[in-house]
Structures are given as structure tokens and as C-alpha cells.
Image (cartoon, rainbow, N blue to C red):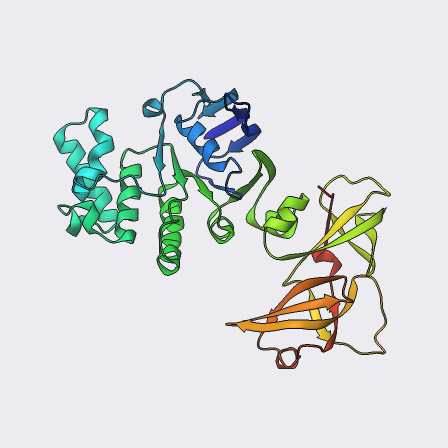
Length: 362
């Protein structure tokens, strides 16, 4: 039995605005699922519908096989953690964490034991009697997580919970969050607009755009094999090249482009003769100094270096393709020959066909 199922779930506001449309999803027990997309795509609205804070306009929400579409939030086996943590500043750490247990009718002894145990797990015991507003951002984040988990929910819902943290602390909490989820085995549904969080933390990613699901897959599937133009442009750093006259030879797909014929994998059903877009990850392309004797061929681009810089161990090049468009190429800085390339140098960019994905336009 799945922990969570969304069946044709939608949300339309009274003015006719469609926030979420025909959302279908099945989440297995103990799975870490991320909703990823730009602001306004409907990911937080979907999370709030799962929690019961937003009414659904159509469809059904099932938790462990039970339809909870009309069940109020306090009676759903979920906990939700918000970006601002929603802590009570006048309460101590202990009081904040135990707040959710007050409605469960536990004895004071049971409540204290549960709170003590979760505070120890999160390293908060020494701050038990401090007011929440006197603690650091990372400590407040841990309080929010502890409060959400102390009620022992079937599903923990997290709405951009790391957004208020600085970059270094965010990485620390990301690592702690994944380890915690694996240790507890609780299903996590996590909303974020940060690709690195979704790709690094989740078992599966739901990519959303304008209230609709664009693609559901593992981080590798979504990154390496985008299913739509939106995903190809939104995830990673892909070069996108216009193609036409689509044809097939077995599993290989071919298109004509302004830079010659290119081939790769098709991500979905595409009709022969159609227009398509070629998506190539920046790190998959291989750049080398141009050799006038090098033969042109499929998946080989020629251009000149228009920009170059290094960030740590990664070299970033922008290559101008005959003034028609530019592509970003990434390579390791340990390749000294490549790092000697200068702006204006002629180069060849090879695109391995097993890293090239053809997607439909629009």
C-alpha cells in the first residue's frame, strides 16, 4: 500500500485561476519525494492540499489507502514544516516541541518522555529551557523538525524549510535531513525551488510548471533524460538546439540543425518529420582546440571561445557557434591544455550521442 496517493487532484480559485491541474502521484512508504519548480508553479499549494490547509477542487487524496480529502488537517496523519518554522517566540524549546502533543491527550509523563527523546536526537537538550527566538537559524530549524516528528506522523511535509538558511548551514542541514529520513523511515514530501536540494536529497522528483506536472522520475532520470522542453531548460545547464526533420533508426533519433545533423535519445513519443529540440548537458560536451583537418560530422559543433572562467575544479566556457547561438561547456580544470584556451580561440565541441536527448517543442 502506498503512503500517499494523489488522484486527479486540482485546485481552482473562485476567480477561475487554476493553481494545480490533474495532479497524479503515488508515494511509497519511506520515500523522499521533492516537488521542484519555479515560484507560482503550484508546488506549495499541492503540499497544503495534502496537509489539509487548502481545499481541493477536484480529485482525491489518499493516505495509507484512506481518502482524507475532506478530513481536517489536525486529524490527518501528517506534520508540516514551514519556511519560517512557525515557532512560538515566547515559548521555550521544550514547549515548542511539545505543542503538537497537547491535542493528543497524552499524560505529562508520556509527553515529557517523547520530547526528551526527540530533543536528544536533535542535540537540543541543553537548550530545552531557552526561548526559541534566542537561538540560531540552524537550531530553530532543528526545533521545527523535532516538533514535526515528535507527533510520529505517517508523512512529514516540508515547505522550503531551508530557504531562510545561509548556504553553508543549508548544506549541513541537508545532510542531516537525509540521514534523519533514512534512520526514521518516514515518508518525506519536500517542496523546493533549489535544484541542488531536490537532486541531492530526494528519491524522486516531481517537476512542476504552471500547475501541471512536467515529469516525475529519479534525480538521474530528470537530469539526464528531460521529458519536456521546460524540464530541459529548467534542470541543469543544457545547451538547447533547434532541430527539424526528425527520423529514427532503431532507438536512435536524428534531426537536422543549423550546425549539421545530430542524433541522440528521444525522451518521449515523437512523430517522424516533426520539429524537435536537442538538449545536451554542459558537462557532457567535450571541447578541444580546433584542427582544420578534423572532419565535420554528426554531433560535432565548431565555434570560438567567447568566455572562460574557473570555479574551483570546474572550468566554464561559453562557445559562440558561428554567431548563431552560444553554448555553455563545463570541464575539469585539471586539463591544462583546455585551460590554456583563450577568448577568440577556435574550438570543436563534441556531443556524445548517449548524453543527447531530443524533446518536443513547447
